[in-house]
Length: 358
Image (cartoon, rainbow, N blue to C red):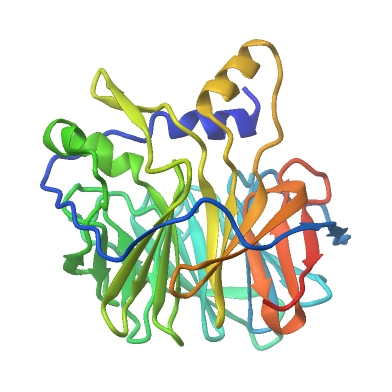
């Protein structure tokens, strides 16, 4: 089975586990139907001096470096480049069973000059730092996560060196985790209006609301974009406000079959980034019904989303970018007016878009 088809189908089997309590709390709900501005963007391909990738899922820029997460990397999960010229530096996060190897890689995050990675299969966060030469990364610290944290699939770092990790136990929306990996407390609730699911299908509901997250410590904004449906949540951790932005496709849709939650709606967002001025989110919008129908007919669509939605930090729709590529991950450099993205369908998968100021 091709990797990208397997990746899409695997979403249908992620909705298991769990039984706990869910609360339905919606504060500051905002429905949107469209964006006041729309712009088509044409990509520039970044030519790399080495071919490394199988499924370049994420791209994070920081400390004058760019790091690419290869979700299905054969030997290494992460590859570092200089920025902005994208000169190859080194690969790290060795795939394997040895104590310092990684079994899986879900994401990575910059924290100053350090880079943290998440291995869900080992329930471990690892801190890497660049050697004095600046060309290679060294493993400096490993944090084992509490057993009460159910399969961490994403994370962000806070100013006080703690972590926020999505909660799929059904208790709440997030886990606040200490720098030693201990669960401190949980917060947030799934903002669903599906009372039947709350009463009868809480485990599947929790997984159907799987989301990608990003946090900007400078403005205190935590953005949460659903993988299914069209929901963007905005938590302002400085003033404790919470806004739910819901688009035309609504909240994640699913049906329960044999204890599993099977998606029946659309592929939603695949990445989100909070900058100083706005929230950027990659949106797909393709229905699972159409994906399954076309797959039966031997038609395989490109993997990724062809839209980038831009919202204000308060959740106001600002702009929709229509792309000439299908992308998975983004890294926005507002100071340079650029969005870098990963296109897993191309042999040269790193592309650049130039944008106007918001």
